[in-house]
Image (cartoon, rainbow, N blue to C red; front, side):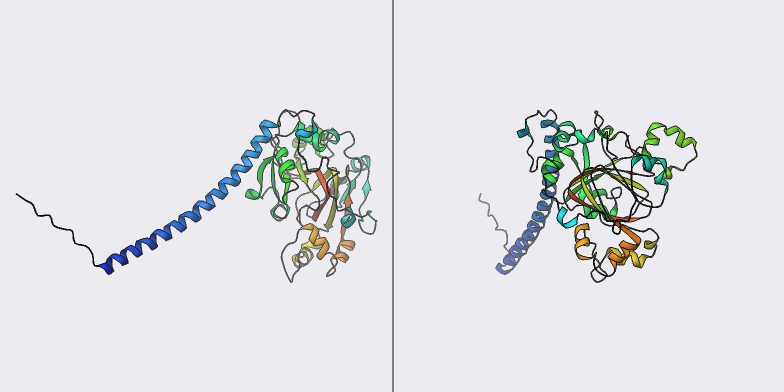
Length: 357
C-alpha cells in the first residue's frame, strides 16, 4: 500500500524574499552591535591586562636586581639627565617676585612658623635623609620596585585632588611607572595611599620636618592635649614623582608642606583672602572667554601676563622656585599651582590626614 506524501506549502516568492531580507537585516544589526561591544570589552581587557602584566613583571623579575646597569632599561639614567625647562620656567626668586621668607630649619622650628598664615620656604630640610642616596633613580628601582602607587593626569589630580581622584588614579608600581610610563605619557604619581613593603621606604625621609615629627615622637601627647584631629600633623606622607612641566593646577586644601628631594618646582600661590571673591578666583584661574582650565605650564605661558593676573600675584601672592632640599609650606586655603622643572621627586604632608597603616 503506497502512502501519498503531501508537500508542505511554500510561501509566495515575494513573501519568502521579504522574510529573508528582514532576517538578514536583523542579523546584520545584531552582528554590528555585538562586534562593537566585543571591541570595547577587548580594549578594556587589554588595558587592564597590560597594567597587571607590567606590575607583575616589575614585582617578579626586578625584585632581586643586580648592580648591572644594563638590567634596568631607562631612557634617562638619572633624574638630572632628563629634559628640564629651566630656561623657560626657572627664575632666581627675586624678592619682588617670590616675596616669601626663606629660612633655615632652626628658624622654622624655633618660631613655629607652621602656625602662621604666611607661606614659607625652608632650606636644607633633607640634610641627613637617606633618600638622597636611596632615591636616586637606579637605587630607588633596586630597593623599592614593588611599592604600589597611584598615577593619573596632573590636570585631573589638580581638579579633584589626589584623595578624590577615584578612578582617575591607576594602580601600578614604582618600577613600572618610572620605566614604562613616566616619559611616555602624561601620568603623574601623587599618592597618599602608599602600600609600604618591609624595608622602610618613607623612613628614608627621617628626620621628618616639624610639625609632622611631633606626632611621630609622641602621638599620645598630641591626643591628650585636646587638639582637634583636623588640626594635627600626623604621620601622613604622600609621594610625588613626575617629569618636566607636570604638576597640579590651581587647588586648595588644609595646611601642608612639600619637600623636594630631586628636581625643582615652580609655585604660583594666591592669597586665601583674595580668592574668597569667587569671581576673582575664576578670573585668575581661567580665561573667562574660554573657560577651560589649562595645565600649569600653559597657564604660565598663556594667561599669566594677561588681565592683571601678574599684578595680582605680585601684590597678593607669590611666584617662587623651590630647589632640591627645600620645603614649601602652604597655609590652609591658599590657592596654588605647581610646575615640575625637570624630573622631580618630592614628599608631602598635610595637616589633618592620617598616615598609612
